[in-house]
Amino acid sequence: MLRREFIGLVGGAAAWPLVAQAQQVSRRPWRIAQVLSESGQDLAKVFEQRLRNIGYGTNERITLVTRFFMPQQKAVEDAIQSIVAEIDLLVVWSTFGATAAKKLVRDKPIIFVAVGAPVDIGLVESLARPGGNMTGITFEAAREIYGKRLQILKEIAPGINRVVVLGAKGDPNSRFALESIAKANQTLGLTILPLNFDGGDDLDLKFDEVKKIGGEGLIVVATALTYVRRQRIVDLALSLRIPSCHAFYESVVAGGLVSLGPDMVAMAGQAADYVDKIIHGANPADLPVQQPVGYLLYVNQRTAKAIGLTIPPGMLATADEVIE
Image (tube, rainbow, N blue to C red; front, top):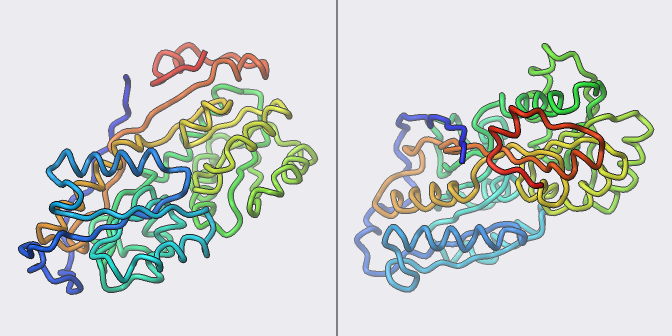
């Protein structure tokens, strides 16, 4: 398997005064909660197993509670509020989850996982020096990743000019994605067409709009809502014979053309390591926000043939998986 490797940031930060480090010697198990989208059940199991692998068994050194939510702000806030009074540490997945945790939890350590732009949306002061009670793992290693997705789409479909960027309304990841794509587009000269949907029920209408504005390619912004709605997004793109580039492997399995995204299983391991560090007395403000350890490229050859495209041989050779 070929894997694109990225180097994480290092550095310190000011002391975080909110948690009593003496708890590490307490006989009471640490009470940990993970909160994530209802579609992330497999990742929840991976995270629990990673904790076991580094020496934590539930009901021994820790107790672990998992809560799932629909990718809507109120739903994730309700999930966090239902458990926050009973825990010592919160692990929260996705930008939806992290922004809700920032709002609701001030006096306990938070580890966020798979957040696109934690500095841009105000979760942390900087990647090297998070400050406050939050740290974690980003979804994007750098702004260049969205630019790379645009380049991949153009390489597969060199004739396209008008590219739709589909995001969820109100999702802070959309602004980050558009800014990143605009920078990469300075050399490509494509027409970028932003388009946001609400909760998913309006996707059919949005793709009618894609047809009206002459969209020739599609980049899907990485967010919990586009992940949950991935099958409908893929089906609608295929109905218009539009090549699509995604951030999630599951979108390519569903019929999307190509994806470039982080190794989510590895991210669960990174989160478990940070849990271990905090239990042993580390402050979140002293733990630099980590980047993904690797990015994976997936290609759906069947979809390429269905919409009349040929995947470049070099891309097929370097892909981590090709769906035939």
